Length: 190
Image 1 (cartoon, rainbow, N blue to C red):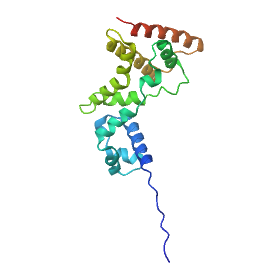
Image 2: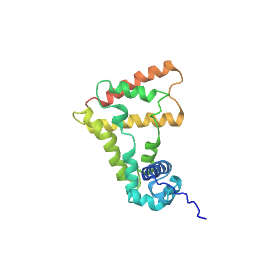
Image 3: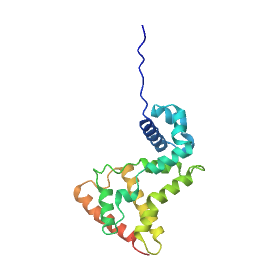
Image 4: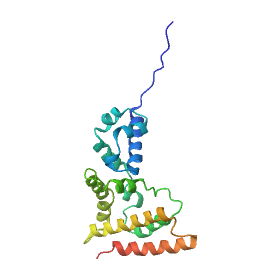
């Protein structure tokens, strides 16, 4: 009598996505140096050799994690008309699911890394400062784009740490207007 053998189908794209997701989760919780390939593979439910197969190295996987994150222009748009108001509304929207801290945590945990810090800075430049500098245009556009980013980062982190800035819808509306005014000042030419 022959035994019927169960054949497990492999799904390379699902495994690759699971590895990438596990890496994002772990890099959001710890620095580049402290996250290991085996730890990523274990969380993904995959063999550690598959990390190398699909991504080459930990450095290349980290680079892919950075590339996989949300782009500021995709979330906020780069159309200058109404940009401060759009951004303020997003920042003050208590229901907005797009305000995940995962990308920010990945940046914060590895920004001072001798190996990953430059990749973090390059990613921020590519995903946020560069597109907004181009959209803002004019003299000192890069400095204004960086200040714009710093304002958004500060408000986002503050809300995560201390909760919603506005307690009531009326106050949220007033603060949305105030934030839009401040952001408009930040991006105007110096």
